[in-house]
Image (cartoon, rainbow, N blue to C red):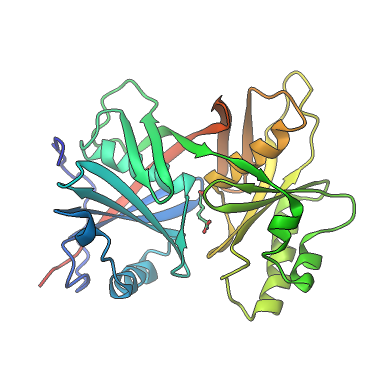
Amino acid sequence: MPYRNASFKNLIGVPLTLFQNSKCSEIHVMEAQGNSFLVQITPFKTLEEAFSCTREVLENFFSVHSRYPSDQFVQLIYTDETHLWHLRFWNRDGSSAEACGNGTRSATHLLSRLGYIKSEIEFQGPVGPLKAYVNSKEPHTNQASQTITVCQGKGRLLSIESIKKSFTQEMWQNVIKEGEHICGVDLGNLHLIIIGYQDPVSYIRAYDEAWRNLRKNSYDSAGVNISYVRCVDLQKKNPEPVLIATWERGVGPTLSCGSASCAAFIVLAEHYLLDQIPFQFPGGTIVVRQCSRKKYWHSALSSYHCSVHLHIS
Ligand SMILES: N[C@@H](CCC[C@H](N)C(=O)O)C(=O)O
C-alpha cells in the first residue's frame, strides 16, 4: 500500500462480531451534504480475491448500518496486483451502483485523512477511472472536514424513449406532469431530470408516496435516479443556487446526490452557456462545472464522523 501515517483521534471502538471471513477491521462513517456512507478499506493481493465480496459480507455491512444508518456502503479496495485503488458502491437496499459522486468524495477525504494519498487520486470505479483531489493546500491528515472535487467522468444525454423503457406506463404517469421539461442522462448510473416550477422537495416526497403505493415499499425502482430541478433564469448575472431534490435508486428520497447534480448540469447546459452551477439540495450545496468535453467536476465538503472497530475472530 502507499505511505500511511494515520492516527485516529476520534476512533471509537464498537465491539461487533462482523466480517468474520473478511480482512477488514474498521468501517468509517462519513458524511457529505446529508448523505451518510459506511466506507471500508480492504487490502487484497489479487483483484479476483478482492471482488469475491459475497452477499454475506454485505449482510454484515447492513448490521453496521442498523447502528449507523447510511445511504451507501463504499468499498475501497487496494490490490498489490494492480497498485491501484478500486471503488465499489452499494445502495441501502443492497443493489450495486455504477456511480456515486458523494461517496467518491467521502472516499477521497478518508484516504487523505488517513495519509494514504497526498492530494490527488485516480480511482478505478465500477465503470471507469474517477479522478479526485483535495482542494485545501493545508496538510490533509486527520482533517475532520475537507472540500473535495471529483471528476464524475463522461455524461451522455439519453432520449426520452430510451429512459421511458425503464418505467411501466403507470409509473411514468406518476413521474411526468404537464409543462415540465424532462431528460435522461447516463453517467454510468441513470438519471431522469425533471425541470419545472414545483418545490423540488415536495415533488420528491409526493413521488415517493406514489412509488411506494405502486411498488409495495420497495426501492428497487426502475433502475433510475429521479431529480426535480426548480426552473430559474440562469442567464441572470449572479443566478441563485439551483434548487434540486433527488429520489435515489436503491435508497429513496435522499438529502443530496453528487451524480444527480452533474446530470442536472448536463441538461441545463443544453439550454444555457454555463460556467458553473451551485446546486442547493436539502442536505447542502454541490458546485458543478464542466472540465473538458463531456466531463464534469463537482465540489463540496466531506466530513469524517467516526470509525467502527470490528472484532475479527
Ligand atoms: N448518492 C449517490 C448516487 C448513488 C447511486 C444511486 N443510488 C444509483 O444506484 O445509481 C451520488 O452521490 O451520486
